[in-house]
Image (tube, rainbow, N blue to C red; front, side):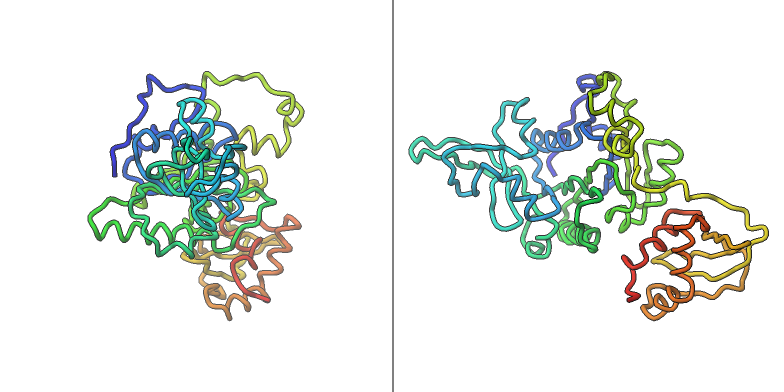
Length: 378
C-alpha cells in the first residue's frame, strides 16, 4: 500500500471531519465504521486522502442504479460525451476545491471507475484519461465481479452503509460486503500484501443495519450511544466505531437554517442534524434484578444465548442465567426456530409491542422484534 499522506492537525479545517485522525490514532484496525449528522465531510475526507496519496480503492454503493447515477453526464470509460453535463460524482466538491476534474465513468452494469477527464479536441468529446483513481461497485454486483482481479485496491469504502427506513436492502448485504472483503484480503495476504482497510461511512438512522449486525457490534454501539461516548475500539477484533459529535467542530456555524429551526425536537432533526438513532427505541434496554422472576425458556441466536424470565405477566430477556430449569432452543436449527416461535416467540413479540417485555441488550430485542428477518418460521 502506498503511504497515506495525512493532513497535519495544525492545517485541518476545524469545521469538518478528517478521517486522517482516526487512521493515525487507530492504525491497526481493518474495519472503521464512522457515523455522524449529515454534512460533516466524511466522504470528502476519505476520497481526498486517497486521491492525494495515490491509493487505489473500491467505492461501494448499494444498487446498480446508484452506480449509474454517479456516472450521469460522464458517459462510459471509452469516452462518448461531447458535453459534461450534470455531475453527481462524490468528487464534485473536491474538483471545486482542488481544481481537478475527476468524474465517474461506467464500465459495465454495476461497475464504474473514477478518472481524470480531458477534452479531446480532435474528436470533440470528453474522455477519461489515464489509470482510474478507483473503482465503483454496487452491492448488487458483488457476485458478478467477485472473481475479478481488484488486488491493486488497498481500501474498500462503503458509503451510506446505514440505509434510511424507506430504502430496500438485501437481507444478505452484510454478508456480501464481508465476503467481498475476505476474498480480496485473503488473496493479498497470500502474496505478502497488507490487509485491505474497510471504511464504512453513514448518517445515523438504523442501529440494526446489516453491517453492525454481521459484525455483531449492535450492543456495543448502543452502549456508545447510551454513555455518550465517541469511540468503540476493539483492539483484538480490529474494529473501530467513531460516533462523530458536533463538539468536534468548534469552528462550525452554530446558526440554524430555516428547516433546522422548523424541525427542532423531531426524529428527522435527531437523525439529520444530531446524528442520533432516532428510529430505534433504545429506552427498552434496561438491566433488571432477577428477584421474583421465574425461568421461561432460553434460546441461542448466533453465538449468544439469552434467557427469558417472567414475573406477574412481565417478561425480561437477558444473557444472565439464574436458574438451570430452562427449555433451550438453538435458533440455528430450523426445526427449533419454528418450535420456539410457536411456543414463545410470537407471545414475546406481542409483549414487546404492548410494553410488557424489556431486554438487557438490543440484540435480544432485535431478534424477537425482527424474528422473521433472521429465521424461516412461515
